[in-house]
Image (cartoon, rainbow, N blue to C red; front, side):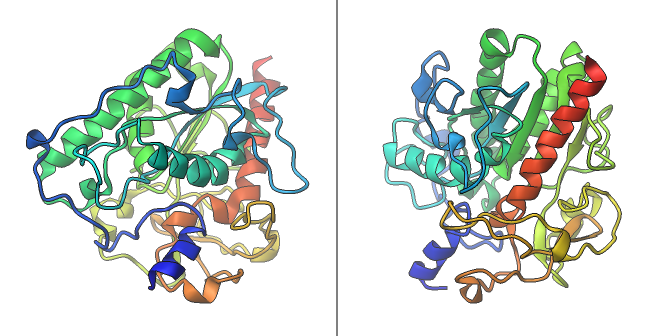
Length: 345
């Protein structure tokens, strides 16, 4: 794929190289490299999105409204990997949060194109964090992978604890994440929510774009329908008929919900029932371009047609997990919050 087209298509959504081992991999070991300084979550600049800031999570495609001022719930959103290119500084394993260019990519891709899908349902809190470089998904050194992911997680954990201490005040919470964000979100749920009073505040967790095995969050069921609460959802999207070679590693045991019907069964759902996608330009909604069918632990989609789609030949739709169902996710999150409020008041 030429650089121009892959740019056009990362346009499709979020800049994530596909999971076929393409992408730059760090050659130096984690232990020999410096680590960038940690964030301070008392400072608004260490958040990509806050209800008190003007930020891209407030954006809406034409005809939709940002409802954060009146929202009855909060959304804690953890963004995916955008640190994918060959690092230009010495901080090769984790993002330096002083890197304005990388921060801008986070804001203009996942925050605008993913986090904003939740701005009808809740006030959005999205921390900047020292995300692990994409190399963690390519390296053969498991200890480097773990160390870089732990550095990233420690930030997300500090952000979550800061959010709880200063802003939550007992409000219902949605946890939402994509890709690397989902690795951290699942761990937050395990370490800080399951079996605690906070679990009673959990509307739902949208743990998208990474396999979340059925038994990995004991005490938190998968959401069985479009209005279940106190549960989690996950899906990973691929072109119909394609099963990735790494399927047996974890996807085989993964929870997969259909983001049109919001059910866990394998019924085929026609694109006429899909509310719509938001690709580029962000202002446009594209109704009824995707069908969806759960196939084991993955979501199958017939290749959607959208401007530029003929140049997208990768059967892995990871970058579009949320965008391709943007309007469906938006309505569903609102629906779950409304159901939660009904039952808890």
